[in-house]
Length: 199
Image (cartoon, rainbow, N blue to C red; front, side, top):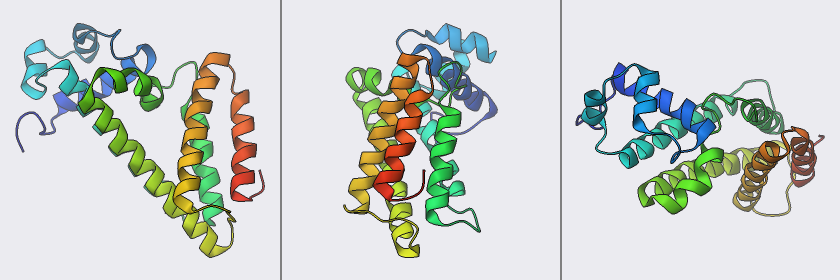
């Protein structure tokens, strides 16, 4: 592992601080000096781990999705629940993490998706890899729900998973626009109809 990818406390602190600040302000609006000052890390340390701000952004997204997917895996391994129950728990956790007031780095994909997809090809592909990981896990959970009888769908699991992810991603943006969590109520109801589960 080279110095640009090796984990260390300083690197992890820079990534965590960047996620927290950029999930609130966006990527372009935040300078490296702001991140480093908040992290308490000298600029020389930054360039030891990241060749540029773009490389930092790519690593930050990779780090974000690694943690996000691990959380999904944990939710979908919860014992004593049907897959429908685990899917409900996942979307409930989504609502809890997507506060329009302060998401503490937990809504990075929502905040940066449109901005960096046009700004940076490496960051766009990091987003694509991460979101594909999310929809793959959703598709597996939906298929398992069909198998255990707790979910009924009319389209293939991967198509339903993509539709649900797009629904919830768009809803998260509307929550921020409306400064209200009411759009989540509609998303919950539509999700229940798509999966034929009780809302």
